[in-house]
Length: 127
Image 1 (spheres, rainbow, N blue to C red):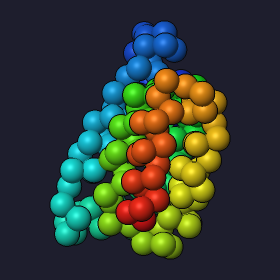
Image 2 (image 1 turned 30 degrees about the vertical axis):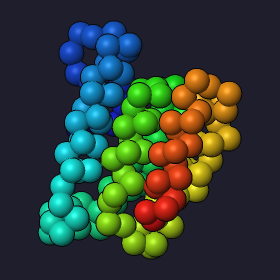
Image 3 (image 1 turned 180 degrees about the vertical axis):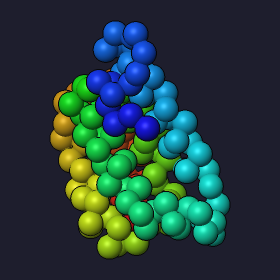
């Protein structure tokens, strides 16, 4: 799978390539987020570095490379119920990255600040 818009094949411009990546990530977040926490497949995905990948997606959102507030809200909702361990969160550095979103311009003073902070609180509570 393409890691960023520059890696999407085809004759699309960068804006359309970024949109393709955003849709793919949205689908993957939904599938993984809705998988039963007792699933052996989900456990394997988490152990193989899924949170590291999700952190890179979060970084892309905050850097305005791929996605925006909608993808951020979806990402936060999708990861909150994942059966993660403290080691997974620490190794991926996703916990710190999620906490830092509250101070990022995508959140502070935006019309979505309440929704973002509510989802961040849910992630912190569940993890």
